[in-house]
Length: 168
Image (cartoon, rainbow, N blue to C red; front, side, top):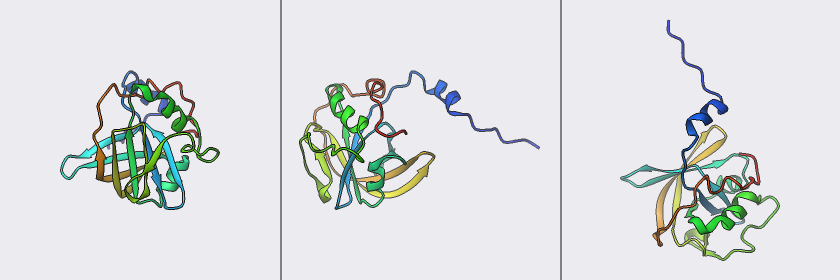
């Protein structure tokens, strides 16, 4: 009888990921009472037709707590000049800091905060939440977007110097 292979540990899997670089995003949301936002590295298109985006939020993150009762998430594309914004939303915790106090933002659809510094974003309605290890996947149906100018994307490697406000 064949045995099932065992899962690799994090260190072994990191060897596969080494050298891969991918964009990071700032995700914002509101539950109608509280605003929240965080830096996210696990985001991907999940369907072409209908369009779907999968956004994975760390279970320990304050933004996740707010997103669990929210209807919408906004996913902001960061470019190479947005490292300070990435440091704010990735290096601070909403448990201790109002991340929106020192950045320009405005209400988007459903009151979701949209960052003025990020002209490229998509707002999506949360269709489903799926536990994915230490993250919760939020499957989004896009309802609004701004294409904004393209540029050099801020990547995981660019943001590697940011110490997370919460452990992943």
